[in-house]
Amino acid sequence: MNEGAIGIFDSGVGGLTVTREIMRQLPMENLVYFGDTARVPYGSKSKQTIIRYSTQIVNFLRTKNVKAIVIACNTASALALEELQEQVEIPVIGVVWPGAISAAEATKTMNVGVIGTAATIKSEIYNKYLHELNPDITVVTKACPLFVPLVEEGLIEDRVTDDIARRYLSEFLEYNVDALVLGCTHYPLLRNTIRRTLGDKIKLVNPAYETAKSLKKLLMERDMLNKSMAKVHHEYYVSDMTDQFVPFADRVLPFHVDKIRVVNIEKYKKDSCRRNP
Ligand code: DGL
Image (cartoon, rainbow, N blue to C red):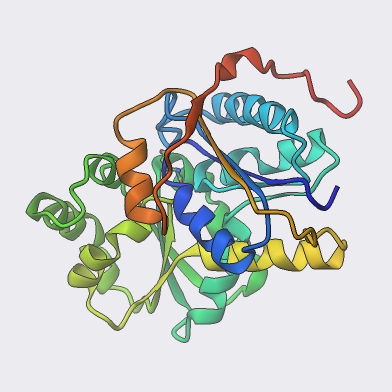
């Protein structure tokens, strides 16, 4: 069981930013990554659809005998985490709670900004968690839907992205915000752009670090760490072989991914892995 892989999934390529952090903090763990590249973006979809997609992915990951699952997508974490935790008996963690913990620890002014997809912001999950952690925190949120396609197009350092960032983020300068949660897996790649827009007084919180830390803690507490001396293996699956995956992976991961397999994800029906059907 301990040699079983960690299943990690995202709506597409963005979850590789979380995967990189998991590799850094848990180098001995085997990993299976699934990116739903055929159906990205999730950020503009309904809760019902996001739960259906996420359930299919969990069903697929279970066929790989994963020992735990990380939802490396803010949108799916915001809308599907509870449902998935009820469906399977292995641990499932998302990125939103860890992101909220990091932000609550980072703020001194008690004014926290959160940016994310339309679905994540509409869910108000960051507001809920941040208030749970500290009722004195004021949360200012903003959906930034154009950031995802800009990153996917590779416009990371580009005038167009700077213009959009100014439009989305300027209002954070009016509040006394001192911590901004990058509440979408693509946004850490826009760190320089966001810095240029907001200056260096606002801490940029990437939930990936705290997510990997929470995962490590959970595996240690349950004695589930991989102690085998066998060579670690990482597998990558997508629902469509898009042109973006490899260039994005090359930008994010410390090595080149040469083997990516395509999965017909619609095959993994909603109820096929229910604990008590
Ligand atoms: N991975 C998604 C997230 O972190 C962003 C992309 C999407 O809209 O699917 O929210």
